[in-house]
Length: 97
Ligand code: SF4
Image (tube, rainbow, N blue to C red; front, side):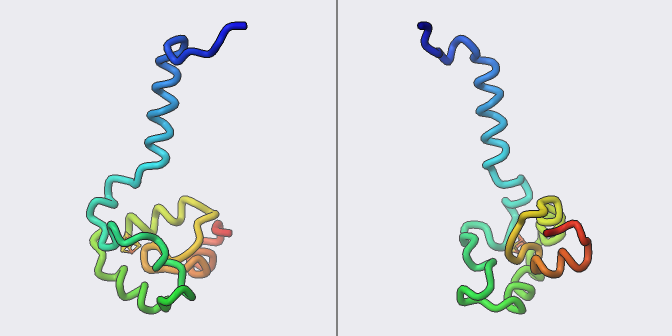
């Protein structure tokens, strides 16, 4: 039986790795995010932070619109993103779960 070797499909393997890296990496605009390096826990109200505090915090972020648009592109996204709650996204756009 022939073993799988990376070199057999290097191009495909590399493409796969590139795709995984792209999916797992934050978008370029995140370099300018106010929350950069702060972790995601704070964007789930009820864990010590209130929704209005997040709305205020995100209001001072230079990439708020990009963040909000990104959240809209994912119907399974939970929490506050772009200063808006999941409920807000559902109410305003309807395509959010
Ligand atoms: S809008 Fe808020 S959640 Fe989005 S990147 Fe800026 S600080 Fe982070």
